Image 1: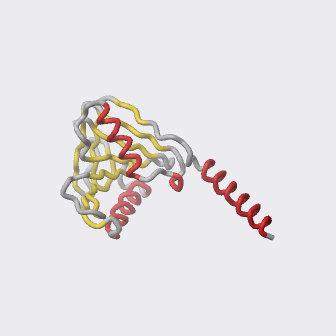
Image 2: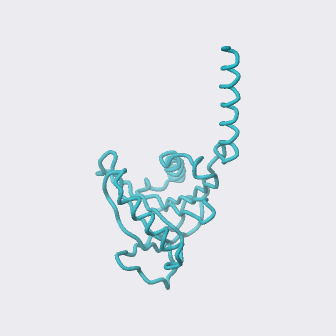
Image 3: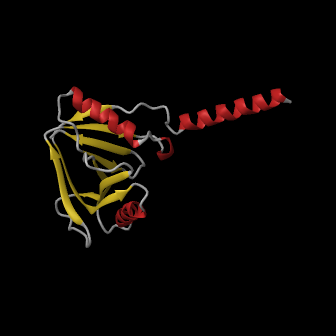
Length: 172
């Protein structure tokens, strides 16, 4: 009887590992340097507890504006890393990367982010298999340090329609 349980657990484990692999869970996250980078983002600023419902509300609101065709752009979350931020709190600007001719929607503000160069991590695995944000940010911070850049104070995440994601750190 115990032998059947072990075989069942082994087969279940193989299935889980196989599905995770198919979703891209074992892919490495490459970090590359890109040239001058500039983003114009319209959105809403949030600072508060990580699990506050406003974060999801702002994200869904921006995504719906894109899906409905109200704003032409790509979903974006800029995460700030101030030293004064309390544990389990986030400081984020949640919105849409837009072109120069796009009007700022009601209740949104505009922020620009630019740098002479940037480090870019591209994630093309299924959202279920994405590494955690701290792992991605750690790779970008390590890359910036190796290049002699100042320690990054923000991370720019751009969500693509095909479920891929790009995370940037700008050289200041």
